[in-house]
Image (tube, rainbow, N blue to C red; front, side, top):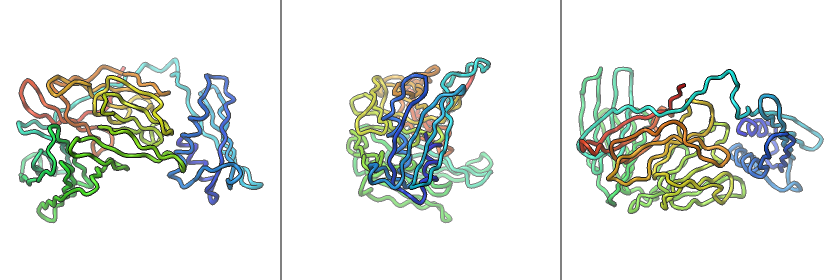
Length: 375
């Protein structure tokens, strides 16, 4: 749908209002036309196109879903006055070719740091090929290490004053680049920069917005859950119920863009929103941390999901594939010897950062995980 939206938006220029109709003439399983229409409208919003009634629209868009030997073909006719443009976008079928080997997604973990003091989050930046800067966010300080050629050349810890101190304090580190860091913890936002030495300024985060890639969520620092809303179309804005974490497929994943969100609620259930104000599916037994994975096998939307245990138990991360309003576990879960305390995307866009506590050793472990693909 993402590829079709790109082509439709180009054809609508300079007209920016349109009406849409979707028809299914394929011989396959029934297609939910309303969901297809909602997804298309949501994907056109960021491109400046606005859906209105047919009588008020500058252009009329008619989308036909047909089937061929490779899967489905989406054909859009864009009519503006006497002008007609036709654009197409193929959608591959879900069945793999018989000659293709069966590939199974999995999760790979690498422990990169261990220490006795609690860790909330961490990040690694590389100013050049011979230097690395490590940022370790602890409950009351930001610790900085610099390595040159593998040898430590700098170590400093800067204090952070907390405005709130719930039992399960959360924190997040965001790198603009290797020398600019932002940390969120306990109602406080800290901005650090190397110029030429490291300087850190911390202040109250007045609106409590935490940066999450292209979006921001408001955190309740006394409870450590988020709130927020998402605009799905020109006339539909959904306010999510309070949640611990949220995930949306990247635009490169099946072209689904930001019209789909799954949130981990406070009640232990995850809810899927797909271009509508109400959840279209609920998944039980998920933990409080979920994160979109960069798929190594295929182009389906995949998410990392932590287990539902508490902080006194071993934990796990399971990879799920979200498709047709269903969540299917794929591969074996990645087991941890203690609770997972944080799960955030890494700067490379392909892996994720994990903070956990080893119950056997008492050490806090910083790890990176990534989606893998094998036979």
